[in-house]
Length: 247
Image (cartoon, rainbow, N blue to C red; front, side, top):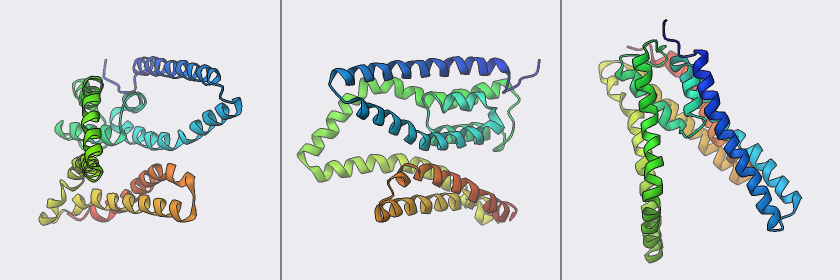
């Protein structure tokens, strides 16, 4: 029997896992409502909190949906749906899958038909996130305590330390964006496509932030990420047509 990344059995497994996660979320929602009532919080406040949280959950969900669609061409729907629905990161999962595809000798968007390659990609997409589940319970308290101590001794250095950690994380992804820029020397301008897409996304994000601050549009802040993703991905089409063929 030939391998199929969209085989029904995969959807059954993935659906069962996601159903378990949803059941867990529903359980803690009920517990939270009961606790809120015990604390004397008004019913109107509880309902407003639930409804506003549900509405603003749509913003990151749109970004995640884009990631699922982008990965589905190569990996089918089941695996991206699982990885981006439970514990995952759209920025990590897409880069990890892309690197694994490249290592397997497949281009972006190539359909994976070899089960060994599919399992390898699933492993690469999972191992980085799984490490966090192990490290967080044992390391977070100690690391957070150290960061707090730095902030208490010197607030300025505490802010610098936090910003440095954030920039370090961003730098890892910037390396992926600029890794193929050197191909320009050989006359291949396709390496500039990720850079141009990043610039467009950054401009959209900055525009959303400035518009939200200047015109007091609070909802725009929550939808800045999906907007920058959608517009950035859309811009990749003309950039690919313009630069992809210039070889």
